[in-house]
Amino acid sequence: MNITRRALLAATAAVALTAQFQSAAADDVTLNIGYQPIVEPSRVPQADGAYEKATGAKINWQKFDGGADVIAAIASGSLDIGYVGSSPLAAAASRELPIETIFVVGLISEAEALTVKSAAKPEDLVGKKIATPFVSTAHYSLLTALKHWNVDPKAVEILNLRPPEIAAAWERGDIDGAYVWDPVLAQLKTSGKVLATSADVAGWGGPTFDAWIVSKAFADAHPDIVTAFVKVTGDATAAYRANPDAWNATSPEAEKIARLTGARQEDVPTLLKGYTFPTLEEQVGEALLGGGTAKAVADTSAFLLEQGKIPAALSDYSPYVSARWVTDAAKPSQ
Image (cartoon, rainbow, N blue to C red; front, side, top):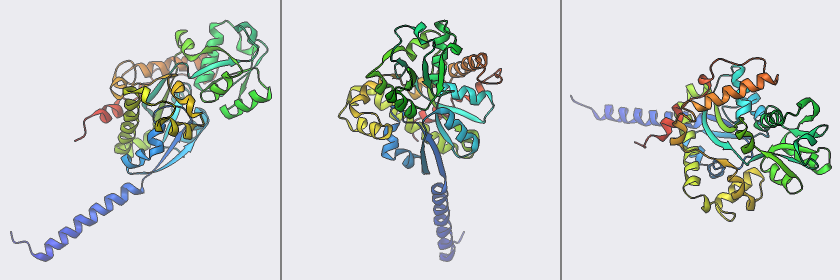
């Protein structure tokens, strides 16, 4: 076969044009991510721009103060990936919002708690004003704790406030207590008493967790971007798990987390210990995305239905949880 110089130049130009088009196409993808100012490892790659580099997308980071607002934004189409707790996730799945859970960020332990000013025991909560963000993991944990203590929720004035509003109301003396997460929780602890943590509530049958979820439409259109996002998140978790002591109060990691969350840098190491952060390999197992997470969402939904927080529960929540992304992200690079 005789290849002319003109044909060769034309072929070379075509290849270059195709590569340029593919690069431009990747750069043209805008990924809208809703995050919350939670103290956890993925704040570090967020601060470093690692997600942009790995996905090749233009990322529009949007800050939210609660999972219910993240869910509303995904439902409206203004977010592609969002950070939520297990309670708003359960509520969204129960309403059949087209989403998938792609990464369990952390199992909540000491990072959320009920802090009060003048209640020495659970019975003292009767008649008190207790704030929490509605349909959040904290709200779910508060209701679970009250049920465990045999305290009627109707006997407590439960107020729907976002974390920044809780901090302000606490300082003004407008509320008697709050079930909320760090870093606002750390502020409340300086002048309040912890009556129960989410570690306690988990022991009473109400475990909670935080997770990244994705719009199914975005995942179907851009699977490589979703996998890259999960890979970066998993790498951050692995880095922390490998040497948590290196993420001390004077470390670059603590500085970046503090900058994005509003937490005091010196508090970051302690706040990180309020969660259990599972690795990519652990997430694939039956305890999490391989089955346990769907069961936890189902159990949470059943409780929310019992409390009248959702109109109905589904018979199967597995379509809203996927181990595909962590499995793909854990594969060795080619």
